[in-house]
Image (cartoon, rainbow, N blue to C red; front, side, top):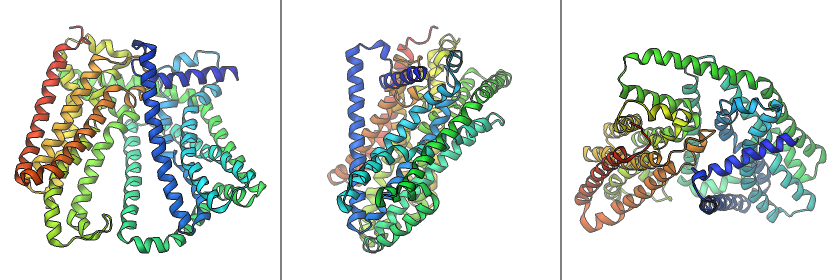
Length: 552
């Protein structure tokens, strides 16, 4: 037990310190300020989630669906972190850089697995608490509360996510074991997970739009719908029914069964994983060495620039969390373009799904002029979320000395890293704009604006992120998530791009057309895209000239 607590403390300190990249170079006061800022942002995000969940619970209670709140809370708390766990478990449990060091210590494998998976279980329990407790508060406010029911509800917030988290981690372990047996497993895993995320997103927005299309009818039938949903939850996830029986009706045997299954399932999953842990990690290491030999043989006829570009793309695909962060924006670009092309903006405006307002043809024609000015900034925002080059230097990690001593100029190396990010971005922007143009949703001018503004904003902010990463690289990471999720370069790139896209988009759609007219505004939008390209190139040249990372 003492070993587990020590290892868990190491994991916790590593997680906390990773919130302040380059913490070793900061004073204690500066590190404290950065961690305090992250804490404030986390509290604000949690407050937003709680407020949204409370409004959802109040809506159900006011519509007479109070009894559906409890099973919905249990199912939501159990399932909320399933996709997160499936995606993150692979990088958290397998293929870590400190695997050899940890396994050389006199620690049981079970202890190592428990300590590493504690972050997954802890994150899902926190998410379940944020979702379930506000729903329970609404339920008890309308249905009344007793001390036993409140205690059982609080305990369910901890118990509900455990079995699904264990199953998701076990599934990730299975996929990882399978990935050691065929060549393109990482790519298949990433495509499947991203497709799942896209399906969830499209389903959520589709349901939201369908509800808005006829709000009165939806409100009238929501009570019956929630009763059907409750029955479906009971049928598909029996532990939700057992927990509901215990919390609502005070059934001790039913709640005991819920608690037993919540503890037994993750225990069995962890026991199986600890028995296969060494084999999976050894297979991953052997596969990595085999791939390295194959790549060396194939790279003999490539130019250094092309070799670095391909190496960066393979790094992107080889780290799932890196790929999910930096590729999902590309997927959203294509999905948004296809949705606009197939549904049509005129159809959306005339359907009444936007706040229940139905526009006539004349109003739609007037609105389309403003919407054409909005499209470039929507795709510019999505493009800035695909900033894989912003952390490409830090991701060199322990192998950074190879790149630092390579017989190439800093401009060539940084240019190759930038090209590995810019080529997919311009391809997705071009494909999205071409699809909307082919279906007649935008004209040639708007097509040029989507490509120019989207790529210009991307090029500007990815070079800002690359400059920050080149000036302050973080090579001491243990898990790639420390760089991909919490580095200053990626944060500045994404947040800066978002602020610019929203601010300039609002200026282009709301302010400038009324002051200067639509034609002049289109000219300003094109000029802003061109200025972004020029600014990005100037930053790149300055980074290549002043960086001290490269020895030659």
